[in-house]
Length: 87
Image (cartoon, rainbow, N blue to C red; front, side, top):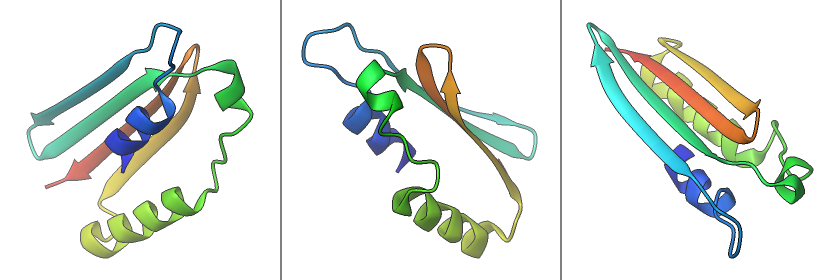
């Protein structure tokens, strides 16, 4: 869902757009980082309590039983998501 949302919200038809997806493993930790361009009109549309985010967090709770950390939100001109999963 995080990668899908980056493509859904991080692309502009005229302005330069950036999507960065990074996945790596550090020991017993799997880290997913997704960043995309945050456009002015999108800043007002972001709903941190959105149904998609709620559903994703519920799925993470079911599968990983609280063995994850999730950080998300605007960072400068980008929207950033960092998910850490304990393997």
